[in-house]
Every structure is written in structure tokens, then in C-alpha cells.
Image 1 (tube, helix red, strand yellow):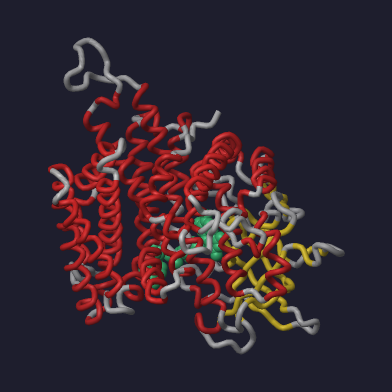
Image 2 (cartoon, helix red, strand yellow; image 1 turned 180 degrees about the horizontal axis):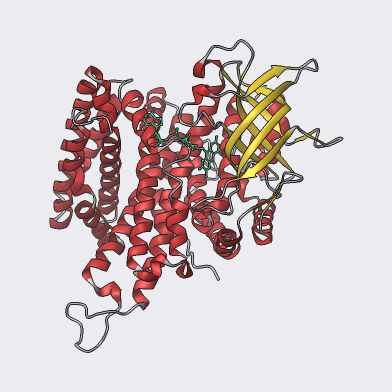
Length: 580
Ligand SMILES: Cc1cc2nc3c(=O)[nH]c(=O)nc-3n(C[C@H](O)[C@H](O)[C@H](O)COP(=O)(O)OP(=O)(O)OC[C@H]3O[C@@H](n4cnc5c(N)ncnc54)[C@H](O)[C@@H]3O)c2cc1C
């Protein structure tokens, strides 16, 4: 039986708050009205709970298997069957344009579906997530013929996509990649090299796998400027002779978590490929895929918080231990009544809801950036997406792991053994701060590019919006007033740290680089606190008012109160560092 209950009311409330209606009014998403979206999410929630979530434990226990003789990778049968049902039902196609065979929903709705999918089975979710990111890339950078050949079956999920960047000596620094692509006599390129850590690089869930591979062509300039992007299918001429391409999985990694997601060493041995986008324009094109995937990986933090909270709360209702304040003498209280346990559970709930709002807002803004009739509004939305992407990826994935750890703590000793399943949440969520650009790299991207490129203008726009909410909340009664004070402190801390980053960071780059992680966390908690406060204001006269106010207060006390300390860390400079 599944233990995951899709929080459809919470999801719909978040969609509403970040502006699903604004997207529906743009004309580009005629189906995205509130009723249709709710029905869709109800249906997908049932599917995820009944079909996908029950495969989560078996996937963790059995993992993926490689046959070294053939290079074939197989998944446990329940996983393969669940994926087929996902494809047959057409769930993967929902958030793509009808022109490519999709259902025409915005990425915001797609992000809500990714949350549900990831909560049900994080390891399996990586397969559709990478496929969907590959679709984004091909929709933007593929030529007409490539789009016609590959998009329809990627959109249905009959074929899946992979991202081939990492090599043994090229991880965070992709400029160091050595895989080559040489022009062949037949007009195709021949790709040769070894890629490591390739998620779902080989498997038996789909008829074809579309590898998107970064490689270097003869005479290309060094570094990232000389990288091109190639599409290398596992099966060539799939509708004709169906020849296997010269690409093979030679090993699977044994990992801490996400056991049902095969992490492959892929050897390309003169594999036939086609150039996607411009020669030497590979990094630019791949960033389309990476940015889509970064948002989806950030959702792993949110999903981890959601399922960890559900499991920990139900455990804490059952488990009795000690006497809670005010309880009858002689009886053991459910641990949920102990103030310290209640604190942890409320922190998980509030932080999870904050993450949901941050990531849904980012997704909503991608729709505004693409389709708003006013060019200034499009540009402002894109600036916000660019800013929130590294913040969301780093803050949400770190927070997801923190919340999984807190949920383990709620379980006591039962959290450390595998029986309850909460240990899997901790193991599965640990990768998210590492892949898709480590959180250290996200922080550096934020301070050296996103912040520096417009002299902090996008951050100041954000701070202005947050300050408006502070002013509104200050008038909203004692509980919201208390939150407003903490949020105002965070705004001050972020404004100070931003000025310092632009100033000291420019003067001495090491100063900005050493403070970048603390700065990114400061941004994350401030945006999270802002959106929870907006939610509390919006819910003020509804039946969710008390819960929304509690979430905002808990987040202010437990999380946002650390803003001044983070600002101190962000602005400490590099002078205290010494060789280790
Ligand atoms: C389970 C799993 C799945 C993966 N899936 C894929 C996939 O599908 N496709 C793919 O291409 N890759 C994939 N990866 C690879 C992943 O993206 C890389 O592991 C990640 O980008 C980090 O690279 P690295 O492991 O080489 O670490 P390194 O780059 O060696 O980094 C090690 C540490 O040094 C830090 N560091 C490195 N450079 C800097 C710098 N300039 N400044 C400050 N700190 C720095 C990092 O933040 C990190 O803390 C996957 C990895 C795993 C484990």
C-alpha cells in the first residue's frame, strides 16, 4: 500500500497564489483554467499514489541490473510496468505544446505534476524529468527535421532522453571534456568518448534512448567555447532496419540512494550523431536543458519535504513515549504532543510549503516570460527566473535533505533502520545538492553572474516586492505583525549582503566566492518567508487562515530568524581562510 497522499489542496492553493490565472489569461494556455487543472491533478495524484508510489520500496531494495555481456540494463518488473502505464495514460505529454503532441498546459502545471511524480518515486521520476528537459532543448534548438523525428515520441515518453555532460576529468568544469565528434563521409558525425554518471543512460523501459552529448569537434577552441552538442540515439533508423548505435553502458554505479535510477558509464565508440544547434554552441543549447532540469531537481527537495512530513507526522501520532506537558499522569503521550517534536513537524510543513511557493513561482514566471504581450513584463519575468533558478535549486535541495534528516529524528531509533522507509528519504535526497551543478556552483553562478550582470537590479526588484508585503503584513494583526518584523530583518540582511557582494566581491573575488553559499541560503529563506507571508495574507478570510498564519510564524521563528547570521557569514570575506 502506498503511504503517499498527494496534497492536492495545498498544490492548488499554491498554483492560485503564484498566478495560474495570469497564465490562463495570456491566451497561450487555453486549457489552464482552475477547474480543468484541479481535475487533472486529482487524476494524476490518484495514479501516482496507486501505481507509482507502491514501486518506490521495491526499486530501492532491488535497484537496476546490468548484464555486462550485452550492456543491457533492466529494472524491477513493477517499475517497468508502472512506467508503461504512465506512458499509456499520456501523463508525460501534459505540459508540452499541442504542436509537439502535448496537452498545452504551462510549465507551472508540469511542475506541480513533477512534484507529485517525484513524491511518489524519486528514482523513477528522473527518467521523465530528463526526457522532459531534453524536449525543452530540442524544441528550442533542434531543426525542423529533428523535431519531427524525435519530439513526438519523447513527448509521449515512448522514448526517453539523457544528458551526457560529465566525464572522469570534467565534472563541475565542463570546459575540460574530451569526448570528440568527427564528421563522417556519410554526413553524420561520429562521437567517441566516455561519459560517467549518466542518469537512465541505459534501461529497458523504452524502445529508444535519445542521448544529448557534449563533445569537441576537430580544431575547436579550448574550453567551453569549443563544445558542440550532438544527438546520439541508442537505436538508428528505428522505423526501418532499427540498427543499434555504437553506444553502450559498461558499468552501473553502486550508490547511497536512488537505487532504481540507473547511473551509467556510457561508452561512445564512433556512435552516429547529429549536430543540434550551432557548431561550438553546445553549452548555450545545453543550458536550456540544464535550466529545465535544475527546476525539476529543486522539486526533489520539495517532494522530499512533503513525503518526509507525511511519514513523520503519521509516525508521531502513533508512537507513545513520556508525558507531554499537561497530559494525564500515568499515560504515555503520542510524541506529536511533545513541544520539541511538534516544532520539528511544523518546521517540515512550513518549509515544504515555502519551497512549493518558491518553485511554483519560478515556473509561473517562465510562462509569463514566454507569452506576456508586454516586452518589459517578459524581460522582468525572465530576470526573476534567472535569479530564482540557482536560489531554488540550492536552497530547496539543501532544505529537502535537512527536512528528511529532521523526519528521521522524529522517528528516533526507528528512523535509522530501514523498516519504516524514512531512511530511504534521507538517502535518496542526498544527491540533489550534488547533481545538475553542485549547490556550490549554483551559489557561484548567483553571485558572479546573476547578481553581477545587472548590478543587483533583479535582487532589488525582488526586495521591493518583499518590502511591499512586509508593509501589508505589519497591518495584518499581531501574529502577522510578528512575522513582518522578522521578514523586515531578512530584507535588511539581504540588502546589506547584496551591496557587500557587489562591492567587496568585485574588489576581491575570493570574498564573494567564500560567502556565496551563505548568501544563496539567505536569498532562499527570504523568498520563502516572503511567499509564506503572502499566503497568510491571501488566506486571511478563508478557512485556511489559521494554518497559513501558523506556517508563516513557524518559518519566521525556525528558519527566517537566521537571516542576520547568514548575512554575517556571507560578508565575512576570505581573510580567515588558510591552506588546510
Ligand atoms: C547519481 C548521479 C547522477 C548523475 N547524473 C548525471 C547525468 O545524468 N548527466 C551528467 O552529465 N552528469 C550526471 N551526474 C554528474 C554530476 O552532475 C556531477 O557529479 C556534479 O556536477 C559534480 O561534478 P564532480 O562529481 O566531478 O565533482 P567536482 O566537480 O570534482 O566537485 C567536487 C567538489 O568541488 C566543488 N567545486 C568544483 N569546482 C569548483 C569551483 N570552481 N569552485 C568552487 N567549488 C568547486 C564542488 O562544488 C564539489 O563540492 C550525476 C552524478 C551522480 C552522482
